[in-house]
Image (cartoon, rainbow, N blue to C red; front, side, top):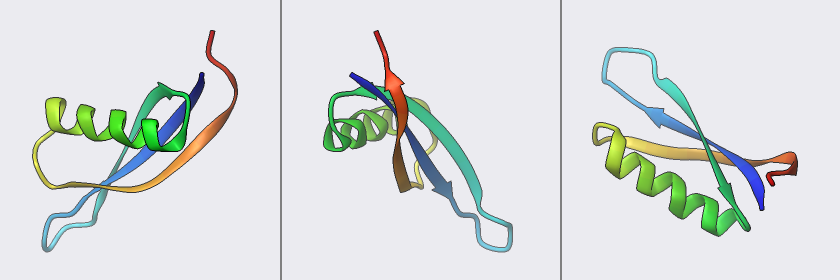
Amino acid sequence: MSTFTGYVRFGNPGYPDIIEEIDVVATSPEEAREAIQKELDDDYEPGGTIAHIEQRFGLYC
């Protein structure tokens, strides 16, 4: 299991974009994307777009 960070962009016309970081624990980038999308759907207002996902170094035990 590794820690992945998803960078989610929220855009509002006329304002600078807001970037939110969401950390999840997953075994693959695909699983991380699903977990980030689930957290977006459950805990955030609509309109967020996953801009980038990166794997952090180290294992999560």
